[in-house]
Image 1 (tube, rainbow over the protein chains, first blue to last red):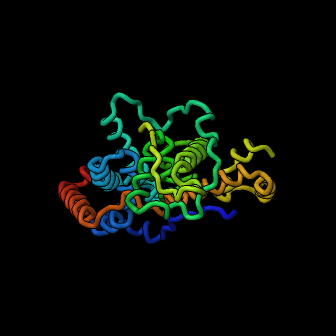
Image 2 (cartoon, rainbow over the protein chains, first blue to last red):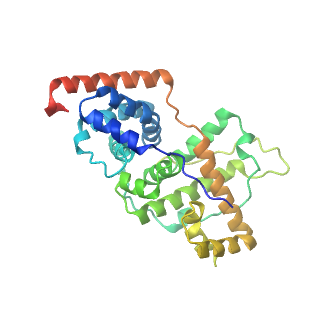
Image 3 (tube, rainbow over the protein chains, first blue to last red):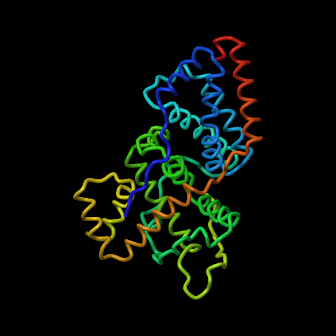
Length: 218
Length: 85
């Protein structure tokens, strides 16, 4: 079985030159950095806040905060990791504001190991995503990931969707590497379990019925 | 190797973050344990489906609007002086 390969390969030197120019007051250089990462920041923000307006605000505020604090960026990490850290904090702040009744923290303790133990081990169809049209698939994936606790969802999005390394994810979220690995494993297993309801091989029926997700949003 | 041990190493295995010896032990387990094989394979598919899903793409018009707002505020802060930048 082959391993999963990371997605992003950033040209770091070029990026550092842009950061230096932006620090020196070149707004055009900063605009290039915005162009480079606005899609990523928007995606991360929307995954965390689960709200389109909040995600738009996070994009603006995260980039403005980055611009105002560029002098604090020392270049010890990638600019993108530093930016993601700002964006995640902004997004969590908005999520907390919207849901004051619930403590939202990346450090939240997870009940037991039981929540991630595989119960559904039926194999999937060879091309599970082709069982559904694009809109149905998007709905399934969105509702499924929204059912994860924020702490799991965030780690999964940074690591597996955005392609940050374990170390970069730990740095961006201010978590230890073992904490990132533990949350990532649970997030992956929980998503797999939930998606199995939709994607498992169905011999007799043609597999088009839509099971209810029944997930509680956290 | 027991299934629980396999599961503990699953993330490292999928990320290729293990030594050759552990990898060989895991693959030996996969060769005879159908359940772990399915869990491993479907977890990998889960990651790939999300990675390729293009959820929450930023529409081009909104992208332009956000960028214009960001750049204009950057210019305003620059103009306001170093204490605001």
